[in-house]
Length: 84
Image (cartoon, rainbow, N blue to C red):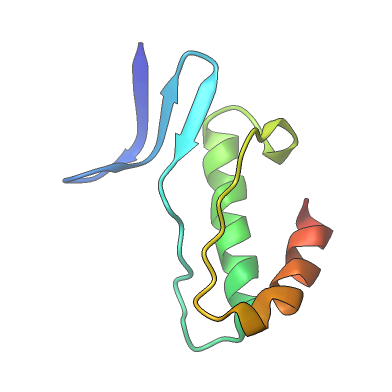
C-alpha cells in the first residue's frame, strides 16, 4: 500500500511505502535568511513530515543535501550537527 502525505498536483511532500518514508526535496520558505536560518527552516519541515508519517529523524537511512555554495558547508554543518 502507498500513502501520500500533502499530495499536490505533481508530487506529494512525503510518500509511505511499507515501512519506508520518502520525502520530496525540501527548500526554505524564506530565501532572504542566511544558510543557518534556511537550514533551520528545512529541518523543521522535515521534522513535521516525519512526524506526520509516524516516524522521526532517528530512523533516517539516507539524506542528500544540495548546497548552492560549498562555502556554506561549515555553517550548514553547525545546524545539521545540532539537529541530527
